[in-house]
Amino acid sequence: MYIGAVLKNIREEQGFSLLEIQRSTGIKESQLCRIESGSRFPTDEQILILANFYNIDSNQLQIQRDSDKVLENIKHFLNQEQILNVAKQKLESKGNYLSVAADSLPGATIPLESRRYIGCKQKLIDWIFDIIQHETKNIHTATDIFAGTGVVAKKMLSLYDKVIINDFLLSNNQIYKAFFKNGKWNKKKILKKIELYNSLETATIEDNYFSINYGGKYFDYDMSKKIGWIREDIENSKSELTEKEYAILLATLIYNIDKHANTLGHFEAYIKKPIKKSELKLRLIDVKEFENLTIYREDSNKLAKEIKSDLVYIDPPYNSRQYCRFYHVYENLVKWDKPILSGVAMKPPAENMSKYCTSKAPEAFSDLVKNLDAKYLAVSYNNTYNSKSGSSKNKIKLEEIEEILNAKGETKKFAKDYRFFNAGKSDLENHQELLYITKVK
Ligand SMILES: C[S@@+](CC[C@H](N)C(=O)[O-])C[C@H]1O[C@@H](n2cnc3c(N)ncnc32)[C@H](O)[C@@H]1O
Picture 1 (spheres, rainbow, N blue to C red):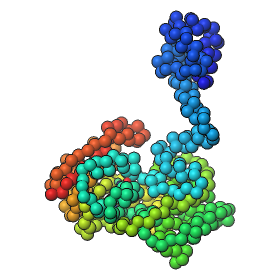
Picture 2 (tube, protein in one colour):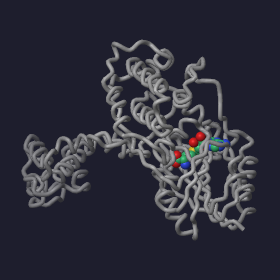
Picture 3 (tube, helix red, strand yellow):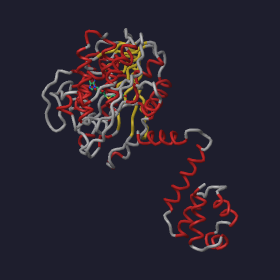
Picture 4 (tube, rainbow, N blue to C red):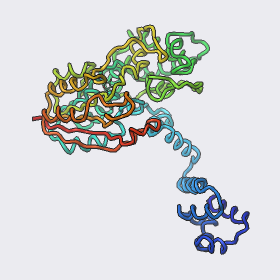
């Protein structure tokens, strides 16, 4: 262990004997001997005492000791360097370990959960479903009415007989068809297309709609040329593709480029720094087929009047930030009618703007809840109503949610503290994720 050698070196350089250190610090000579010989690690307290005595940075000593501990843990494994490398990527992925796993396993498909999406409930899924399972009974049909990434619906598919999934964004709808829809598709045909896309040479590709608009902004210029070419090819091949195959190619494109997007996870803005060059190598998404799933792309308030479901999970936008604006690049990529884009963020004309991001949100929520024919409602929301930043402020007050839900049935409230990484904005320090369960009267 290097920490021992480091400490021994410092002691000898400063000319102290072990006995002198024992007298000055109170750490027994025998313990010091074991630390320096590497047969035990110094404790946090011993590090502080020794750093103080030798007048060196205790933090650096701690890092030396902890990295020794990591090495100690992996010393019996083969491929130690690869293990450390993957661990580093996992750290850098800020918890998005699934995408790192997919990247490091050749042939592995990309999981649904690996997409960056504001408000995605993946990290809360066990907490949400532990509560739902405990608080509800006899659920056969479940609905995810503001489905976003679809991770909640995916969980429902593992628990209930029938699932309904809905979101009004075009890109989300294609993603659900690709990952979940029961439909004909030929894996060989799709892999051949992916192989063709991966063999493209950028130098031979001409400028196109995607590169002209987004090149050097959301994606590096060469990569945008490839993305534009691939998208055009998918459209030109549409007549030879089944509905499922078309969706698989679009979702595969979105999921692969998402990792390269020069953003903080949404397209309200791009990072104003030179973009690191990287290669776009497409990998197939994790295609599944479920017979017991119905996919909708409707306004949730309209759909609420049309469906009957034992459980409805409601996870609307919480603030003024519109999802169609957050993910306008994917909406535009899927729609592919190539409109003129405007502003620094290069947005297309607005479409699918949600009432839940406006002052009409309480009214919309009340109407939705009133019209739902369900045994149970599960509502996710958070407590940022008092946020100093206008755009992070909740559009519906918690009292309003509670009043509306209480009128529908007996309602319980559950809260979970949630670390919110938001560039140090202290008003979000007490951020809590809330889950309401209503047993409908
Ligand atoms: C908070 S996100 C849901 C996140 C989702 N639970 C997940 O884990 O990924 C809210 C979603 O509602 C959708 N949405 C907003 N207003 C809608 C409306 N009126 N009808 C249908 N979908 C809507 C947005 O497109 C967005 O994907």
